Length: 213
Image 1: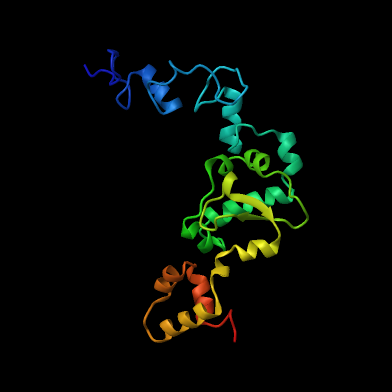
Image 2: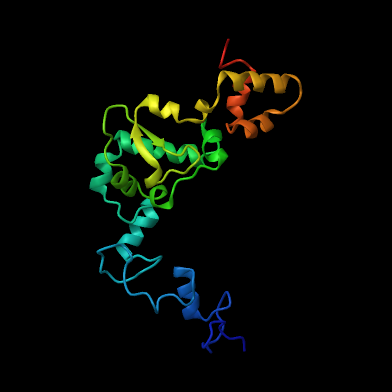
């Protein structure tokens, strides 16, 4: 008789290598041994009984439905139309939607969002706070770094542009790019890697859509 694969369990096999009990635990938690060592919900301050994925039933339900265990209808109903919420949606789009216009400059070159922010607007808003002034933009201090608390701030449009990949290009570099490409010395991809900017910037320079002189 085939037995459950969980060490110490002699019960009859039911499915996926486990007895019925461990199979049900596996389906719910992703681990047939889970449950016995779970005490409570991992949400800070919550004393409810553990249910699944580290949460009690209430927080687990919010997590699976909204991607945020701390979601509340009142909170997001009031902020879903705010400029901060639009920024949060926008950075997720540019990092993970391959069809987005700016994907090449963000997700396409390895820029990501920390898990804390990626799955929770509440966490993003708590860390970033309300915009300090009208038309403030989110800026990554290290332009090659990710969207995360220690690397982001609200800034003016001018400061944001100065810190962008485009600001790495100078007139001298523009001339070098065009010369190397026109002489067949380097491809667009190679130039992108050499000067540390995305391919679209190099293409625009070569086609003289930018840096006209």
